[in-house]
Image 1: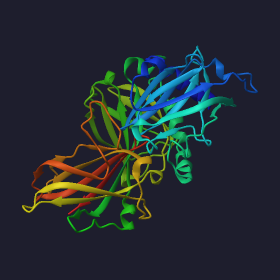
Image 2: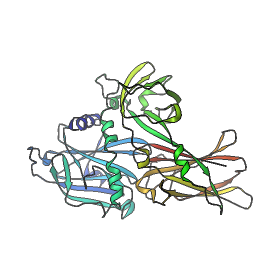
Image 3: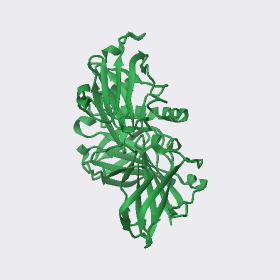
Image 4: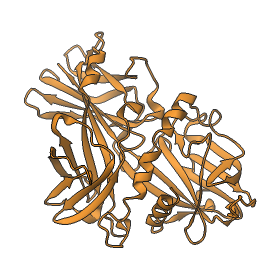
Length: 404
């Protein structure tokens, strides 16, 4: 694990650092703490840390920044609605330890006691092995979270380990991020649902729809790739599938691309190392298949119309697979809807609905996950399919297809 963390440390040294004084005048979530000078049993001291690498995934994208430790203290301006991992480094960018609260090496910055104005003061930090332990535990205090949610988040550690293995995917000894060719591999999940709700008629939900969970694999490439003309996937190494099919290869709108692959009968891709050929150039990627049910929600839409029968608003309800209602704030980052007619033509895309207090630059986003009112009523007389999609806190994508 130490080796994996060291690899991921290297990949992000090219990004800028945030110094404490740079965020003094910013509003939003602040995570801060003070470094203890005590040495661990290995002789490593947390006082050797000079910066913190902050890693998170938001709206399906990998994001990382650095925070300087000044005078033994640090403060980070964090993004609400994300999961953040805090990795402590020395002046040679060598790994010292990772922030750990209740044995969870992540801070879920989703459901907070003071929303976007929350300050999380971790107080004094000490090093135990490679775990950086705060004297103040934010779980149950600033971070509103249940024991069950904490245990669920512990299951995703393997996902972050795979990120550490994909920093030089073409094995040319040049870090992918330095040439904007970083690759991010994740899973798409698709469910065929029943009927959406309409005005006073509730959506039709039953457990049989959970048997229709379909898997596909999505690969995102940075702007250095442009839009590849060809892309092929094989693997996992040592146990290659013979049923991998190509689904699509599209521009991502930011100069890069995303490609999707699936297997026969839409079965899952197992953990392992996969080979990727992009315009004839070879890449290898480690993949961790996170159990879909860890973050699986049933998002139930109800459409509301005016007297003319045109759509004026949409309300959403969130349930777990066992049909219990849940607040989705610690599970997903955003939700959006797409409407299609009987010929499969999309005629309406909603903005992204995001957690309250979350601000995303350059995003057509609306705060609030439960209701959305359209600026202009639209005709839904030919509506055949309502696809409700969301990204979980790891960037995995879920699409629930509701039919007429």
